[in-house]
Length: 543
Image (cartoon, rainbow, N blue to C red; front, side, top):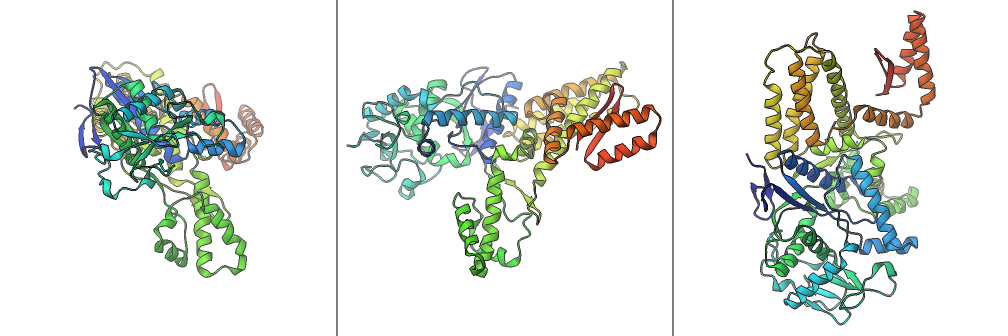
């Protein structure tokens, strides 16, 4: 069947719109580059990377745009604090973002527009909205969108205009708005803001508001009525709602054929925490305590400063805030990647349907050591995939042509895999036939005789599912080398000492001193080192 997705605008599952034969056009809201991203920020690039791969696998040419918001109040704040030019700050974190999502196996989009290079287009659309009576200029040089002029405002988020509040948006500057819900299209420059944060405009020097940026960038690269607009669930309102109001008022056509939103990655601070009953009582009494906030660390420090003077409730709060701070530290993707491979993080993300919430779990021992049970399990699974691919290649190299008709299982599992992705990009459902393909490959690798035709069919099937998921797609030797290097460093092991022990064991075996060879192997196993003896010698991995 044709691929279908859940459209947030109509709240229905529909065939993915197609504006042009043989082509798909997708715009996804990218990061605001003022710091390192967290794991939740990684979900959209992974989800939409798989969507693009799946559509390309069906023969479509996909024009995929994902932007960088490199002009923003948060970037300016970081730049002022660091004494840097805002554009230098943005450039640094653009590079960091590319490195982080690249480590998760995300391929670069077709185009990566930036706000800073789209200023003329932004000014043009703002002027068009002013000319059309949808925006107004204040005496201070700010430009606001007049929400009351767009009759369909709220159709995406299903929010009534009379109950919406301006604090949901970023257009809160100035005192001259006509309506509380109006949002900024252009913000006049403030005296304290650096030169790298302002551009000339008909209304004075300033910078664009957040929402107008994506309307201009998507229009410039994809035009009107492109196929799919995607992003996180948090962007549905106000960001995407405001994009619709701006774009449709300016160009008189639907902005996108369908809207696709991924769910949150949530931090369950209670799971694996072993909180005592008094702490659970405090936690359950205030739902906001479950939310991670930048204020958690100052609050923890204030509680710790009280020492023995803390009340029973404050002691309970100390444990809660300590765990929240711990979660926030490891929720940063860059830091998490020091403990779990990016490919495993990708597999973990794909194990849950993109519209469902995904829980980030962390376990902590009394001595402060942390582990990530679900992610570590995902890494072991990815290791199994790569190991199976290597075994399959070795088996195929010695297999003979049987002349028998290949079994149908590989083809049937590929069909089931594709069908799951056609059904609202059900990656969780697609992983089942993918796992069954690898299980079958292992069965044949372990068999004394395996028909070459069946092995070749499995190689082709596995190549297909790994290319679409982006998991176990790359060089397996490189994967194991990367994981081993990280584990050796984390355990404080000496690589040279390990290599010396491997050589010692090899020499002992040559001398038929098998007792010594066994002792060396046991020593290495105790260190978490696995040895593999093959025709070309002995290799090792950290497991």
